[in-house]
Structures are given as C-alpha cells and as structure tokens.
Length: 276
Image (cartoon, rainbow, N blue to C red; front, side):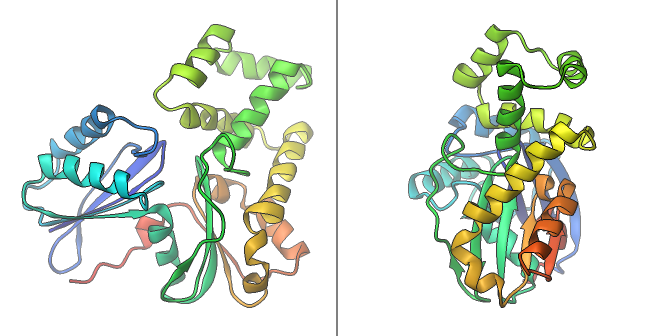
C-alpha cells in the first residue's frame, strides 16, 4: 500500500491506497513543515499517524511547503524510515500536489492556505518564478498574512470598537502571550493564521471586507504577477482553505482582470487519482 500526505504548516491530510488504487484509510493531523518544525515535532506527528495506520506500507509520498529543499528532504526521509522500515520515500513541495488539480492540463496554480505559493504548470513541468523566503517576507494573501493584519489593526487601535470587543472575547490577546507565540512558539505562522478564522467568520463586516480586498489585490499584483501571460491563455486554480473561503472575492477580482476560467479547491488530495 502507498501512503500519500498533503501537509501545510497547520494541518496534514494522510491517505492510504491499496494496490487497486482504492483509498482504505485517511486521517488529519497537525501539519509538518520541515523549515519550521524540529525533528521531534515531526516525529511526534508521524507517531500519532503510525498508531492508526495499516502496517503494510511500501511507499510514502509526502508533499509539503519546503519540500524541494534538499536538507529538508533528507531529514524527512530519515524520520519516515524510522517509523516505516525499508519503504521508498518521496518528498515533494506543496506545488507538486496542487498541480494535480489541473488534471494534467496546463494552468496557473496559486496556493492560499496558512502560507502562499504559486506556479505555472505546462502539463508536464512546474515553472516557479518567485523565491521561497518564508512567512515574514512572502505569503501575501495567506492565512498568516490576514492574521497579521488583524492583529496589527487591534494593536494600533484602528479596529472598530464592536469588532474589537468580539476579537477580545475570541482570543487571549495579552502582550506576553502574543510575544511568546510569535518569537518563541513552535509555529508562529500557524499562530497568526488562526486569527484569520475570525475574519472569515465575520467577513460581512465592512472593515474586514476592506482587509480581504487589500489582500486579494496583493495576490493578483504580486503572487500571480509573474504568470499574467499564462493566465490569459490557461485556467487559474486557487488551492487551499483561505482561497476556498474567500472565493467570492477572488473570483470577482479575477473576472475584473479578464480571467474567466477560475477554479477553487480546498483539499487537493481529495482529487488525487492513484495508479500503480
């Protein structure tokens, strides 16, 4: 059997398929990002999975942010092989999973989840034209981007009073807690992205719609800018939870820019076709 995983920084979806390609097991755990998680963090997630998973795993395919980094690949292979003995392990980045949603056809792919990524897939090869510089520099329009904007509006005092009260009732906003999570926490990116849930739940508020609109603008102006020529010819695929929940805003912006063929997929692993 083959174990396939699609992991973000916040959560990871695991599926097991038998030799006929039928899914026989699935589980969601905490996410694994080799750039920000320690060996112990990664091992603890795999141990939780191993407690439930069928034993007859012959191959592991793991897709994650940072999966193209050679050092990260070697770390993950070593840790996986500690739990799944003598298996073939393949590590790819999150775009490797996302482009499967095109059905093998050319398209521009944009991941908007806890983080952000983008590429043009020509039907065979992934063309990526932006560097990976982490959530502090990149990730415009992602969950951690929106979380940061919300937290900033609260800290500077320009969040509207009624919204501010709801925000305070929802989260522990003591300065020492926030500083601990941002500078010493296990996963600052996911911590910030957690605040984006508040924005999605209250998206009808005009203040939050302004924040959403600004983020969507940055996605098209910066994250997708290197692929404008391709978007004029091929479909645009938005992948991830943030994209899925904000699809009305993204679709409206795409239409305003003349991009009519737009697709939204929350979990690309659900569209996976496995062949042996």
